[in-house]
Image (cartoon, rainbow, N blue to C red):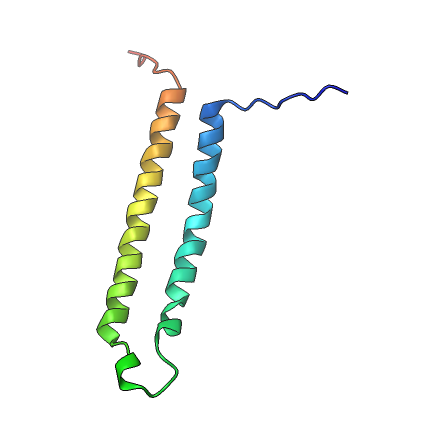
Length: 92
Protein backbone atom coordinates (compact mmCIF):
# COMPACT_ATOMS: atom_id res chain seq x y z
CA UNK A 1 0.00 0.00 0.00
CA UNK A 2 1.58 3.34 -1.03
CA UNK A 3 2.06 5.93 1.64
CA UNK A 4 0.34 9.22 0.96
CA UNK A 5 1.56 12.40 2.52
CA UNK A 6 -0.95 14.63 4.13
CA UNK A 7 -0.45 18.15 2.86
CA UNK A 8 -1.47 21.03 5.08
CA UNK A 9 -1.37 24.53 3.73
CA UNK A 10 1.39 26.46 5.46
CA UNK A 11 -0.82 29.43 6.37
CA UNK A 12 -3.55 27.33 7.97
CA UNK A 13 -0.98 25.18 9.80
CA UNK A 14 0.73 28.25 11.29
CA UNK A 15 -2.62 29.77 12.24
CA UNK A 16 -3.61 26.58 14.05
CA UNK A 17 -0.31 26.50 15.94
CA UNK A 18 -0.76 30.15 16.96
CA UNK A 19 -4.26 29.39 18.20
CA UNK A 20 -2.79 26.49 20.19
CA UNK A 21 -0.32 28.95 21.72
CA UNK A 22 -3.21 31.29 22.61
CA UNK A 23 -4.96 28.41 24.38
CA UNK A 24 -1.82 27.33 26.27
CA UNK A 25 -0.75 30.84 27.37
CA UNK A 26 -3.22 31.16 30.31
CA UNK A 27 -2.22 27.73 31.61
CA UNK A 28 1.46 28.59 31.40
CA UNK A 29 0.85 31.86 33.26
CA UNK A 30 -1.14 30.06 35.95
CA UNK A 31 1.70 27.59 36.48
CA UNK A 32 4.19 30.44 36.72
CA UNK A 33 1.98 32.28 39.24
CA UNK A 34 1.56 29.13 41.32
CA UNK A 35 5.34 28.69 41.43
CA UNK A 36 5.75 31.64 43.81
CA UNK A 37 5.23 29.58 47.00
CA UNK A 38 7.91 27.17 45.77
CA UNK A 39 10.45 30.00 45.83
CA UNK A 40 10.26 30.52 49.57
CA UNK A 41 12.70 28.35 51.48
CA UNK A 42 11.49 25.64 53.81
CA UNK A 43 14.47 25.81 56.15
CA UNK A 44 15.52 28.37 58.73
CA UNK A 45 18.75 29.38 56.99
CA UNK A 46 18.93 33.21 56.91
CA UNK A 47 20.84 33.33 53.62
CA UNK A 48 18.25 31.15 51.86
CA UNK A 49 15.37 33.55 52.37
CA UNK A 50 13.70 35.43 49.55
CA UNK A 51 12.28 38.86 50.15
CA UNK A 52 8.67 39.74 49.44
CA UNK A 53 9.77 42.42 46.99
CA UNK A 54 11.53 39.77 44.89
CA UNK A 55 8.32 37.74 44.73
CA UNK A 56 6.34 40.84 43.76
CA UNK A 57 8.83 41.63 40.99
CA UNK A 58 8.55 38.04 39.77
CA UNK A 59 4.75 38.24 39.61
CA UNK A 60 4.86 41.63 37.89
CA UNK A 61 7.37 40.34 35.32
CA UNK A 62 5.27 37.25 34.56
CA UNK A 63 2.19 39.46 34.23
CA UNK A 64 3.89 41.89 31.83
CA UNK A 65 5.36 39.06 29.75
CA UNK A 66 1.91 37.43 29.52
CA UNK A 67 0.42 40.69 28.26
CA UNK A 68 3.20 41.12 25.71
CA UNK A 69 2.89 37.52 24.52
CA UNK A 70 -0.87 37.74 24.11
CA UNK A 71 -0.52 41.05 22.24
CA UNK A 72 2.12 39.55 19.93
CA UNK A 73 0.01 36.48 19.22
CA UNK A 74 -3.04 38.67 18.58
CA UNK A 75 -1.11 40.77 16.05
CA UNK A 76 0.23 37.72 14.23
CA UNK A 77 -3.20 36.11 14.05
CA UNK A 78 -4.76 39.37 12.90
CA UNK A 79 -2.07 39.82 10.24
CA UNK A 80 -2.54 36.28 8.96
CA UNK A 81 -6.33 36.78 8.85
CA UNK A 82 -6.06 40.03 6.91
CA UNK A 83 -3.62 38.55 4.38
CA UNK A 84 -5.80 35.48 3.87
CA UNK A 85 -8.88 37.45 2.87
CA UNK A 86 -8.76 39.70 -0.18
CA UNK A 87 -9.69 43.29 0.45
CA UNK A 88 -12.98 44.30 -1.06
CA UNK A 89 -13.92 47.76 -2.22
CA UNK A 90 -16.62 49.32 -0.04
CA UNK A 91 -20.05 49.81 -1.58
CA UNK A 92 -20.91 53.43 -2.14
